Structures are given as C-alpha cells and as structure tokens.
Image 1 (tube, one colour):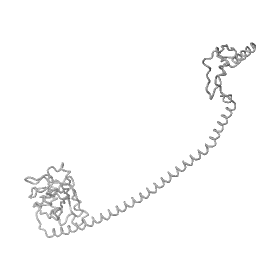
Image 2 (cartoon, helix red, strand yellow):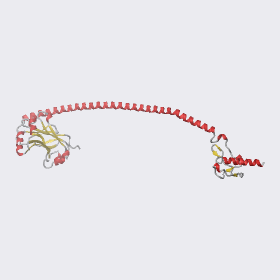
Image 3 (cartoon, helix red, strand yellow):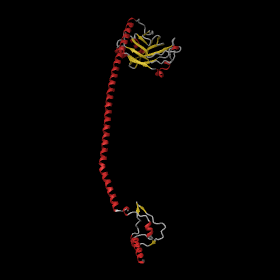
Image 4 (cartoon, rainbow, N blue to C red):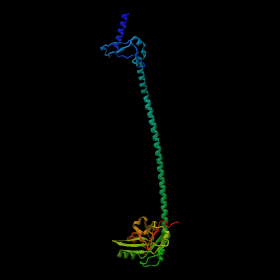
Length: 344
C-alpha cells in the first residue's frame, strides 16, 4: 500500500508543478473557494522552470472532493462555447449589415417627405403673399383715385367761391369812391372768419416807398370771429427791389372778455388776384411764432398790439406782370382757420 500512496502523492505534486498558475474550476465564471478548515494541505515548492510562484497550496483529496466543481462543459475557454459565441457575434454583425440599408432608406424617405412638406408650405406662403400684394396695390389705386376726385371737388368749390368773390370785388371796386391813400380804407368782410382790405392808388404808394424806403396803409377797425383787428399793407424798397407785405393787429374790443387769450387760431394772410383765383398768394401765421411776434397774440390793453405778418409776399415786378392790380387797386385779406370763442 505504501508504494501506492507515494505514487498518488507524486502524481499530485507533478500536476501541481505542471499547472501551478491554473485557477480552480469555475461555475458560471466565478472562482470556487477551497475548504477553509482542511488540515490535509501539502505545501510543495513549484519547479522554478515552470515559472510559478512559491508556496502554492494544493488541497487534499477530501477537500478537493468536497469543493463544488463546475462541469467541464461550462468552462470559460470551452471550444464549443467559444464557437457558439463566435457564431452569435457573426450573426449579429450580419443582421446589422442587413438592416442598415433599410434604416438608411427610411431616413432618406423621411427627409424627402419633410422637404416636400416644407416646399408646399413655402409655395402656399408665396401665393398668399402675392395675393396680399395685389390686393394692397388695388386698394392703393382706389385710394389715389378717391383722393384725386376729392382734390378736384375741392378745387372746383374753391374756384367757384373765389370767382364769386372776385366778381363781387369787381362790382365793389367799380362803385367805390376814390379816397386819398393817406386815409385808411374800409374793410369788406365776407363771412364771419374772413375779411378783405382794398388798397387804392397803389402805384403812387410804391413810388413814395422808393423815396422814403417804406410806406404803410392801415385799415379801419373790423370784427372777425369776435376779435377786433386791423390789416396793414406795407411797401418796402431796398436795393433794386420793392416788396409788399401784409400784417394784422389785434385791438381792444367789446367781446375780449368772451374770447380765448392768448389768441390760438391759425390765420392766413393773403394777396388776391382780381381775375384768377389760382394766382392768389397765401401765407399762414402760426401761434408757434410767438417768439417772433411778441405780444401780438396776447389780450390787447389800451391800444392795438404790435402787428405781425410777412414783409415780403410779392415783389413789384410780380404784381405788375402778374396782373394783381385792378384799376390801380390791390386786395389783401385775412382768414381765420378755427373758432376761438369760449364755450360755457
């Protein structure tokens, strides 16, 4: 029996020397523990030629038999398992290679559909914009046409009114008495917000201005829209030019306590043509020009306020060549643009 035991021990030592670095069999990839309390361990030195570490522990046959062992078929490096994993890996790669073209085709189709949808939306927006543009252009044409008709009606009404005025003015001039130019002339008022001042012997007035440098003719008092006022015609000569100007003056009146002060109504100073209303010259005086006119817009006290207006409305050449004189008389006037009497 002793030779048999020695043979077994020698065999185990030979196995330990040949496979000192091998790990115990695993079950599902986990290393199995040795018997913790085994007393039958045999310490051997591995052969230096095997390249193993010293003091490797080999369990006895009892501990070895009691240790759980995995079946050879579940070993990590089993050829069959390796072949199966290799085949599964190849099949997965093949499936990906087969499916990739389909995925790419689907993506291309989705992008194509999205582009078609976007193109359709852009086309509809373009059509809507074009329709809106045509509609806007048509509306603008209608507005321009309506504005043109309105301008024509305003011109016709203005021409008719001014023709009536000039006809009346001619009759007044034909029947008016001749007054010396140093006597203030009466003012003819047509309508509550307009007044006209006819200045006779105008040629003589211009000749005097060429000598003195400046002459002025002031109307009598008149009432316009509740305000008491005067109109002043000026003739100035300087250099080689002679100019006429028109100014207005506000004077104390019986209705001043019922009026709005400072005076806020915009008003127009004019030179009228005796035959052609289109040649009338108008200049508007605004309340924003108070820094120029001073107390002109304030409530008049004991006397008329300082006049304010335009000193160069027409030149002598324009007056004579344009036909603004009728029997050596020129007509100027004032028109208020809005009501200014206080309410309540």
